Amino acid sequence: MDAKITVRKALENGLVVPAFNIPYPPMLKAVAEAVRDENSVAMIQVARLEWEKFESVSLENIAEEYGKYAVPGHTLLHLDHVPVIDEDHLEVDYLSLIKRAIAAGYQSVMVDASRLHLNGNIAATKAVADIAHAAGIPVEAELGAVMGHETAQATIPYDEIFEKKLGFTEVADALKFARESDCDWLSVAVGSVHGAIADNLKDQKKPAARLDIERIAELKAALGIPLVLHGGSGIENDYITRGIKAGIAKINVGTEIRQPYERAMREKNDVEYAREKVYTRTRELIRDFLHTAGDAEVLA
Ligand code: 13P
Image 1 (tube, rainbow, N blue to C red):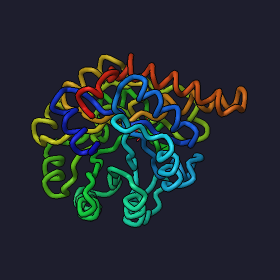
Image 2: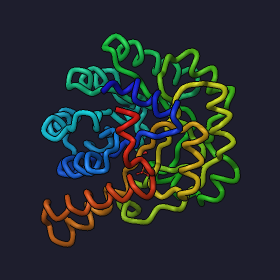
Image 3: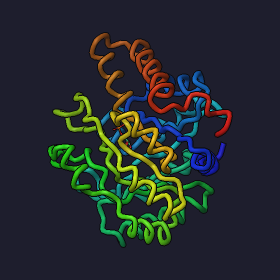
């Protein structure tokens, strides 16, 4: 499978490609089997903060684990959030991480320069796009602020974020961004929030997020490229369905499978038991929440 073609097909058919995060390496086998058993197509992804702040170790470690459990025709390997400025406001050597991901066999990559101003974000994304495209793989970028990872921002009440459209992606900016950055997919801020990663918050249930469907439709009409929704856990289900119809072609899901893994490990400290929990939850998400069961017929 080619990630760019698969996500494009999802957009054209009103479908979505889920992308499941792997903060703990044993989760990967369970996710891959769930995707296969629901006859779905999904990305398996890791973000830098998952090897810095959780237990993924490195992007190479996840690529190696993926090599053991990948299911041809069902799974793709994606590098999620490589920040240019990270959640602790430190600069990251993002280009070398992108080069390492290409060498390790990742089939698509994300650069997140959304903490920079528009022109800085464009320049950083373009630098990544040049390298990735030369290697034949697509690039996801982010414009706007999908909140949640930063401890301070997580304290803003959700209703206030949504009502005031705090950090939402503006159509005019997005148009300039897509034209000049050469990104293939754009992560947009339209109401979802990332699952919190701060120690005091990471076990909590996420607020039931809503989506600005009108903004998604406007962005799709203006840009014509697949849109990505981060913070997929905990969004009201009706909004997921409408968001996909409006132009979301990839959706990231982390917290919904991380929390069952962590709970199971706390309960029994047994990896196989924790894997079973992740497997079951991933199948439920594919069937009942994302509605992508059977999509391999169209997307593979
Ligand atoms: P959730 O943890 O909220 O599902 O978000 C995952 C995500 O967006 C990773 O990039």
